[in-house]
Amino acid sequence: MLDKIKELTTKKDKSPELKKGEIKQILIQTTTEVLPDFEFLAYKNTCYSFQRPRQVNNLTVYEILHINFSLKDKNFACSIASRLNQEYIFSNQYNIGLLNPHKDLKVLRHNSGALNIEDAYYFHNGQVETTIKTVKEIFGDFKKYGLPFLDRQAERLKSNSIIKRGVDFIEDLKTDKQKLKTEIT
Image 1: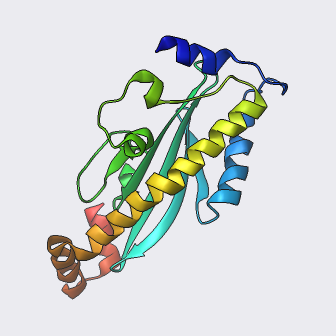
Image 2 (image 1 turned 90 degrees about the vertical axis):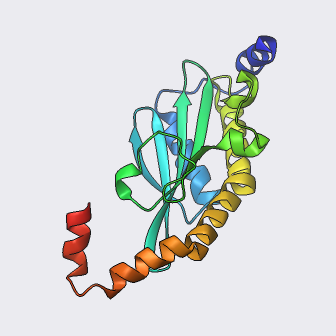
């Protein structure tokens, strides 16, 4: 198990060492190429966040790809979130609830809640070539497992009778909607 991780993180390629901060441009460029409807949102606490707003039943849903990167530990940890409440966009709490679900990408990939350490992260060797290859793997997994997760979540929001009833109730209120939204948040 640890031998596999050691092999992934120490095997050299012919490219230069990744410089501190260089990963940001690699992630932004790959996002632009592979997921053009997702935009770089922020970098906070070693986490790069990319966002796509989506309209669902007159609600704005914030779909997020979080990519935690460690040059020192030579790994990435990635997760997907769908947020109705903007206050939770940068929350790192996993959540399987209806309103603001947040799941680990590797958990989606392996369809399992508990993973061995070698399956829980995306590993790199700290060099440009291998890191780019790992980033492409992440985005491939996001397209294959993350986007369907976000699509299923949008359908859940559209079809859930409690959500629909709540939105209808808010729409029918005879009050300033912006003022109500400000008061709620």
